[in-house]
Image 1 (cartoon, rainbow, N blue to C red):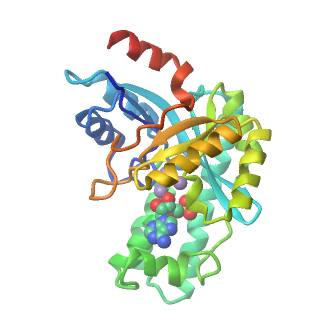
Image 2 (spheres, rainbow, N blue to C red; image 1 turned 180 degrees about the vertical axis):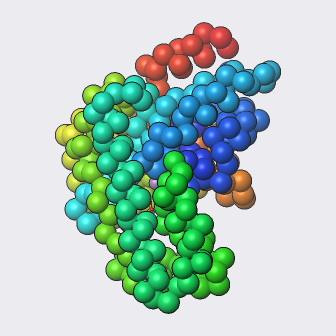
Length: 292
Ligand code: AMP
Ligand code: MN
Ligand code: MN
Ligand code: MN
């Protein structure tokens, strides 16, 4: 029997719309066997997700992998590095995540300050300010775009990025993310594996993408996200070839953020034949194979 595996998704701990518990329950309904919660720059959702897995009754066997999606700066790009199966208590990793979390909170405040200067009403940002200052839930530019949409300042999410939040726009604030080397080093020190997330989302030339994979490999990175929900068979084949070329393992993830028409947990992300899955040596995978 094939195993259903999804190593990339988001909860309300970052910019997903489901709580960690709801996310786990949905993944279980979708018959996902191996799930990693990978919120942006935070581990805050992991304990709740683990408790939810332990409370599941009936259905398919499911195991949760501790995960994170780290925002990194690399040349002029923001690159997302997925990390999995680390010790969440490891000091170097906790230090890195704390600094990423601080950077995210500070950037959100600076973006909202800029928006006020641009004539956006403080009221429109008040709920986000409160969330940012008083809860463990992080905010991303997605939340700010939603607030602009709700306040009638923009007509679509895309419009929010084009007019205010996108790189070079009037409320853009350069983020202070860690480097790829730092992200890979911290996750590896904590015993985990890493991958370059959604390699085709950075809109870089083939030459730059190869440069990125070379740097990532030299930093000790482990894998490439080969399969994701919205991609053509050609794109998937191309990524599988790149993984082989750079001796990287392969991962699969939906990047699920919310229920909708476009992405579903565990859906249509099977890896192509002939590449080595990053989960192959994970104890949770061995345990699942054993019980199936
Ligand atoms: P951040 O990590 O704070 O820079 O926020 C990035 C998040 O904003 C991404 O994870 C997406 O969920 C969302 N996002 C980025 N660009 C767009 C866009 N053009 N339209 C809608 N959402 C976007
Ligand atoms: Mn996101
Ligand atoms: Mn991402
Ligand atoms: Mn993601």
